[in-house]
Image 1: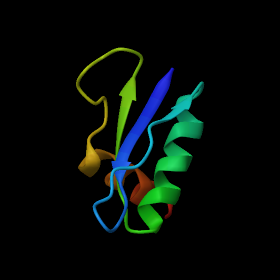
Image 2: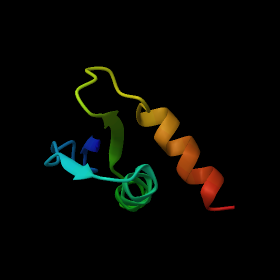
Image 3: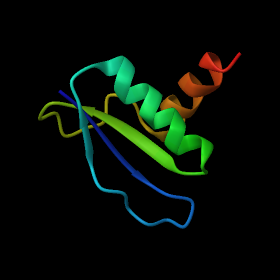
Image 4: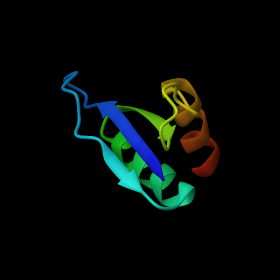
Length: 65
């Protein structure tokens, strides 16, 4: 399982979203990023993000080319 945690453009913490597949989680993260939000990606019960705000942003930029 993958989890997204983030903040919208007004620094309001978003509800955690859960996904079965990494690709789906990353697509949703990019949707949030396009609205000015910041997102971190977590896997299962690992406390540290597997992708932080910067890494998610870089991935989204690389996919939009």
